[in-house]
Structures are given as structure tokens and as C-alpha cells.
Image (cartoon, rainbow, N blue to C red; front, side, top):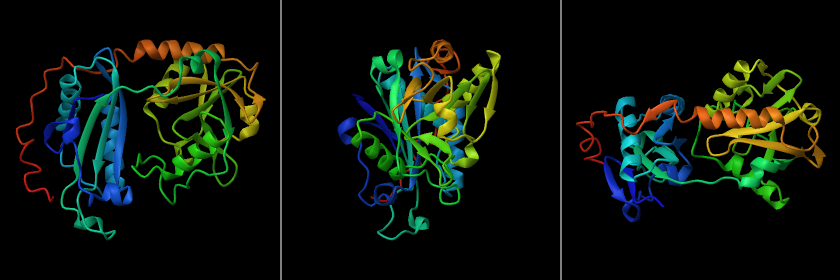
Length: 309
């Protein structure tokens, strides 16, 4: 467990890391977040994660009180203070303290929380034997309701789908849109391989533009595959040679069965496993290392001096 958490300009103990019951993230899920991985002292693609965080915040008109440079220092320093070399970072920006009404403009300053800890999403056998997943009735929200590119703290749509999968005994679940096209799983992006074509649903359908997803697409091209962002249905998944999911916590995990139908020969695909091996090596060198000597922000302790209680 983490011993030290960054909270609004201070590094505090786990037991003292508390937010107000009037924070709009607690009351309404009003905030954005990022999940980031740390591999051998390298924070994988930190800049890409921060870019996505600030884009999500801009979409919901949430002003982050730290600059990109300041936030980068905070993330690295939180890992250092917890003496981590490998782990998982949860970066959360909430709307901040307001009242019981919806009005976000009454929240005077956003809260910033950084947690550096450990995470294990799937057991080892998921990577060696693959996952059996199902399609759930809860549909992915259309982009007109909430654009899937926003990594919002309101994850109820995904949680409902996760519950349905769990109730059916499945460790993960596929979510479709209103037209029957695959969008993503409850916490991961999905890929299929057919011949030399590697496909994943486009972000405009409501899928998150995952950092791991983008990395795998780059690797697929380097391996000589035609990589496409295109709509597909369950038919294409059933008919695929291979299928796998990607995500910050999941990394690259093979899917061998959907809705009681085997995919390919029903075992983890050769290409999937090669992508997993390549990814595990690549992550150790693409990002920001904890040894980087970034200057501590001078105004860090002043930003939240007038924060409402």
C-alpha cells in the first residue's frame, strides 16, 4: 500500500489523504483521471498521459491548477517518496469543493490527487491461457452523451457492464454501441487480427484512445501488419484469427473465447504473445525516469492556500 499521497500541494500519509464530502467528484463524479504505469523506474509515456488528462479536463471545462511541468514533477516525486520502481499511478483531478447543486462554477479550485501503488488486474494464467469474455446488454454511451475520449471519474456505464459480466462469471465484458458495433471492453480496448490486418474500433465510436492501444498500433505496423481503426461487429470477432485487449493495467491480454465461441483455435495467438513480449520490453525505456532532476515547483504550496474546507 502507498505510504505517501500527493493531495493539493502536500505530500500526506495515506490515513490523512482525505477530501471534502462536498467535493463534486464525490457528489457527481465530476472529475477526470489517468492510470499510469511505472516500469523499472520509468513512468511509461507520462507526457501522453498528461496530454490526455489536460484534454479531458478542457472538454469538461475543468481548470487544472498545475502546469504540465508541475504535474510531471508531482507524479515523479510521488513515486520517489513511495520508493517504487514498478507500480501503478492513479492521477485524479476533481472539480473541487462546491455545494449540493450541480453548478460547477461554484467550485473555486480543483483538487489534485496522485497515488502511487501496486495493481494486479488479471492472474498470470489470463496471459498464458487467455480470457473467456461475454457481450453484455449495457451499451457504451454515445459520444453525443459523453465522448469516450474523456477519461471521466464517472465510470458508472462501465461499472454496470462489469457487474453484468461478473454475474455471468466472466472476468471482462464486451460493450457494443446502439448499432451493434464493438466499442471497447469495460476497462480495456479491444483488437482483432485477421490475416495481416490488425483492427481496433475508432475513437469516434466512443472508445477511449488508450495509451497502450496507441503503442500496440505502432508495434503492429513495425511488425508488418496493416493496422486499421475501423468499426466491426461480433461477427468479425468470432471470425478473427486472434483477439486481445489492451490497457494500462491489463497491458496486452489474449481473448480466446467470446460468448461461448472460440476465437481462432481457442488459445492465445502467436502475434498476440509477440506483441505482449515486445510491449513488456519497450515500456522500460519510453517515458520519464524517476532519476530525472526536475525542479520542484516554487508555488506548489501556495495554490491551495485558500481552498474551501
